[in-house]
Amino acid sequence: MKKPDIGAPAPDFTLLDQNGKSVSLSQFKGQHLVVYFYPKAMTPGCTTQACGIRDSKQAYADANTVVLALSPDLPERLKKFEDKQALNFTLLSDPDHAVADTYGVWGLKKFMGREYDGIHRSTFIIDDKGILREIFAKVKTKTHHQDMLDWIQANL
Image 1 (cartoon, rainbow, N blue to C red):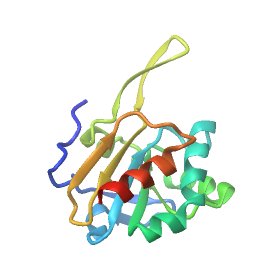
Image 2 (cartoon, rainbow, N blue to C red; image 1 turned 60 degrees about the vertical axis):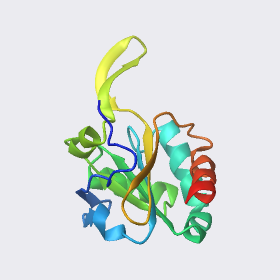
Image 3 (cartoon, helix red, strand yellow; image 1 turned 90 degrees about the horizontal axis):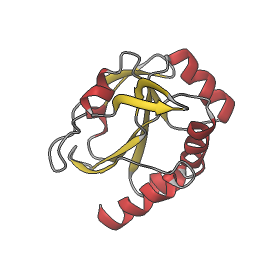
C-alpha cells in the first residue's frame, strides 16, 4: 500500500456522492480538504467518526475546510447513513476501491482471527492549492474531528 507523497498534488478523482451526483476533488480548489476513508457506513466506529464531523461543521467552515468521506458503500447506503445520522457533509462511494488503492488505504486487514481486504481508516489533509499536506494513517474515531481541526488550524 503506497500512499501519495506529502508535498505533491493530491491524486484527483471523481466519485458519486450519497445523492448519486458526481463529485471531483479538483472542484474544491481554494478550500482546504479533509479526505477521510472509513470501512463501512452505519457501523459503530464509523458512526462515531461521522457524527463528530457533523457536529463540527461550523468550525470546519471557519477554517475554510470541506470534508469528504469515502467508503466502498454504494450511494444508496450512504444516503441512508446521511439520513439516519443527519450528516451534513459529502459521503463518496468507492465500491471498486479504485480511489482507496490510489491513496494506499486498501489492503489486508485482520479482525477476530479473520483476514480480508478492506479500507484502512486514514485521513488526508489537502491544502487550498490541491497539495497533500499531511497523512494520518491511524485515527481515533472519537477525537478525529478535533484532531484534524487542530492540525489544520496550526498548519494551514
